[in-house]
Image 1 (cartoon, protein in one colour):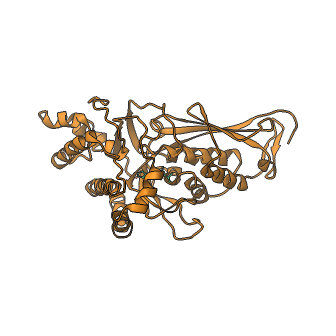
Image 2: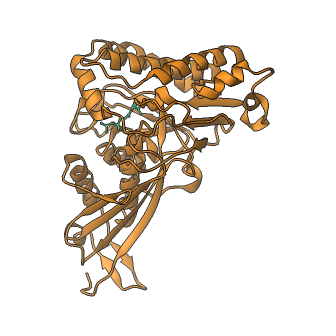
Image 3: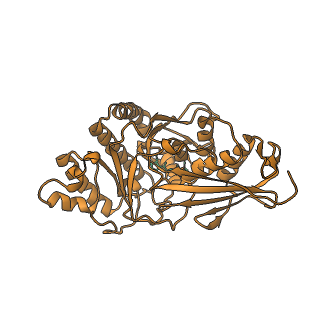
Length: 385
Ligand code: 2P0
């Protein structure tokens, strides 16, 4: 390493994902190995993403990280595991113009600075850790991300890791010239936050729970890219941007410890649903896709209620809006809708504007508060239109 001072940096962007068959419960909390497979849709990074810049320099005196501008501790096991694994995969990096050469051995001695920003509320149920951890290490193919999404009124003033893992893994892998395949990188991102491993791919992604004790086969695979079903539109309305009161990590730990329903779900329900969901995605079968998504979300919340003490990720607003969604869904064949304005649409004469108003929006899928599992009520936060 040349003695003069230099900083070498890389910026990467990763989109969040929304699960349609949900991950809830770990069989190994250190390696983050789930008790069931899950499937998600990766969103368009233009709307919901984490951007991470990672930098290395001989002048840095320790590893440091900032999230949304605020410095956070890197002492946790999850970060340490991710950093150790990424460092072990590092290769030589050379920039002839700047006269910088970093060898594989140098990476063990050099410190990193990591700066992550989310463009959406963190820890409010939008898988904020997933995008972040993915970005620690990968090259993103710009074309490989995202069903179209429309985000409304998002804020980025709260803080958590989850989604950020994938983004940080992605960026670090690029910085360190990591040559491992996407599967290995998804396994590294998984150790930052489980759902993060699904954000390494665009489109529809399955996280195989795997069987190996060391977690080597617990990786994400792409089922279909974002072009496969490009008239699927996901609308996310944030009814509250407050941080949820029970983190996913704590919540799923308590569910595994106390819920009797969770085991039935993992062993008897999800395996069949995964097969059906893969079929629905393959065949563009929206009705099956929506029915399975709704059923799985409801069962996830049932497991939360079956946990002791119970976890309430839904609130009165969610329930009221969920009723509206069923009405809307049953009568208009238009998706899963829980949003105040739906009640207005349902009451209005004729067909809701969004259902038919735009030919490229044949299918509308609304993932709202019950999927965001946000706990506080801020009714009216999202206006119709
Ligand atoms: C999912 N969730 O499949 C489910 C649905 C929340 C409900 O994955 O402990 O932040 O870091 O592995 O990944 C949120 O859990 O939890 C999550 P950890 P993570 O998207």
